[in-house]
Amino acid sequence: MTMRRNIRILLATVVTLVALYPVSGAAATKSCRGPRLVGLTLTAARSAARRAGCQLTLRGAAVGNPAVQTIRWQAQTSRRTRKIIVWLSPLCATPVNLGGPPGEPLHTRGQSELITGLYVVGGPLVQRSAPSCRRLEGTPGAGRVTVADAAGGIVAVRYIAKGHLVAIPLSPGIYTLTGVFTEAAIDGEHATVRESVAISVATTVRQDINLSVP
Amino acid sequence: VLITLGLVVPNAAAAVPQTVINGLLHKAERAGSVKSVEAVETTLINARTARGSDQTAAGSPPATSQMVDLVVMHGQFVESDVPIPQGAKPPTGTIMAFTVRAGTQELDDLYVGDRAPTLAGLGAVQTETITQPAAITSRVRHVTARTSKLRRHTKARTATWSNNCKAAEGHHCYAIAYWPMSGGEQVQGTQAQIITTNMNVPEPSYQFVTNEVWTVFLVSGYWVESGQITGRGEGNCCTLFFFSAVNNGAGFEYRKGWQVTPNTWNNYGQKWVGGSTWCVTVGPHWEQQPMCYAGLPAYSKELQTGAEAFTETEPTNSGSVLPNAQFTNGYYYNWNKAFWFKNEHMCISGYPPGYPGDISFGTC
Image 1 (spheres, rainbow over the protein chains, first blue to last red):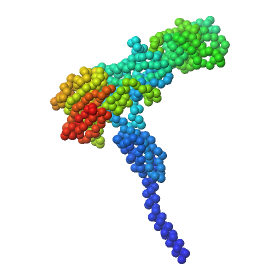
Image 2: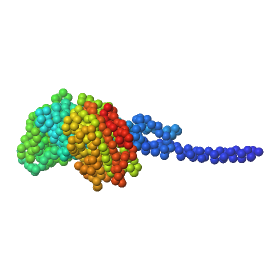
Image 3: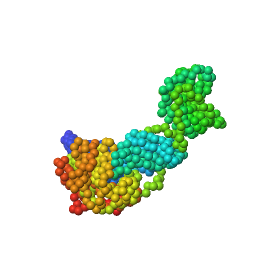
Image 4: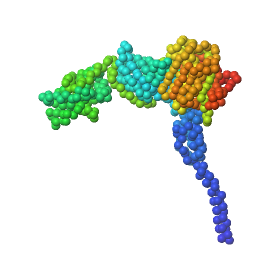
């Protein structure tokens, strides 16, 4: 009798294990392994999450263009909930060619000098993704910057390579900057743009020279 | 004191590197104002002789043939960056002289006082007068473009007429239709009929408004465009001109064309003509090619058309555009699809019967 009961218990245990095995196996394949999604577009992140058996929970900017907007940050994955919380960068609609940093002139304490670059700004519209649309900056171009004092006397001439800025030490005063863009032509002539800037004592000023184009 | 030693005149062609002078100017500027600079490459013994230094008399003889750069700043200096006894005043004077080991640029000696060393006879003396009020005319420091950490300073003249047209976005506003192609979609040209019914640019000397069509090469960031423009230093507030422009590997190029009559449908387009060349097309059947630009890919995967504005205050503009596209089989078709984009104070609506990309645009 005892023997028969033991066999029955053993059979029940085996049946239970067999019944449970496929379930636990499926759970293993669907467990969320928490792939790294930062930097991926939302479209790519969704695919990666799906492959990893995870669910995305979106925070941050509203979804405008999932093929462009990127993941800026993700919270630690909970294996139990299989959810990944990600923060989405906003969609920035800007010209293809961007200018220098916003809010110029920018002032900071330091030696009295000017930091400047040459930017061609404009062109068709393009959608980008960045943590802050306002902080987007372009790439400066090549050319020549001439600095003239208030009396019109030229006090500095600098040649700038593409992708670079130039730092020009200046005494406090008001100056006129003339930028000649070697990689931008208007009706066959190198484009020229003038900008004024005031340099204060012990202050470094960032003032770029922007050529706005259609 | 080594003044009894004869001066060894080094190679007169040797020169102090500009980078050395620039670096020392930077230091001298922090100690005061610089009026002029003299620099010479000579031997260490000659430099010490010129400055009247007696350092070698008290210690072991240095390598007197060691080449050094002797850089003398004239101006007014207070050197507070040196250790001095408590209560003592920092050295001041009209001369700041540096002796720097050639090659290693190691500072051998720094002098601040009123006694100017005599450089004549030491070699080829480089002199430079620093124009006032500008401080340094020869200092160049190239720095790689980077995200600025400078403190933001409010700019008084950033008056804008649309929240989305701030300096952060280059002050450019759009009311456009665009066709971002996907999969195997690509085109090798576009034609557009554009009419401008109203145009007023408040400050046309450098600001502008365009009604135009773009062929965009997104991967490279290049584009070619054509249409009609008011402003950009051409004409008055309201005169329209044909224009075309390109952004390719050589940079940006803009060409102004003829005056355009408002309230008329005008034809503008771009087409690939072979190799890397695209031509701008105009005329009743887009048969004229007034400008061609090289350095572009053969196919494009995005077309745009509509209005672009770059003005500090709100302009007035209204118009319509009817675009099509030249597919890779050479024939022209309507756009497969179109999306719209507009900044605040810009408006866009479908132009009947409403094929993709057919829009009316303007300010509102």
